[in-house]
Figure (cartoon, rainbow, N blue to C red):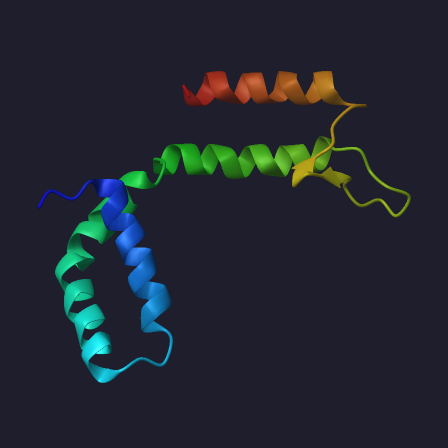
Length: 107
């Protein structure tokens, strides 16, 4: 039987959910045994799914800049909508800084 990578990850998630509840011994053993068989593959797939460290560092810095340049509410806190910083007043300045940093880091 050929299992695709996304199916393997879905199976792993099911094992995680099922393994956290109270189950009969035979079914718990079935989950534990099969989970141990696919563990190495799942770990490799999860590592491959992670963006490169250089990009992660860039994204952290970009988020910090977005927070700095974002519009502020009456208390001085950044305005956030749909899990994103709202940047309207200082948008051009923000984009210039991002562009310079992208060029320096070759992303």
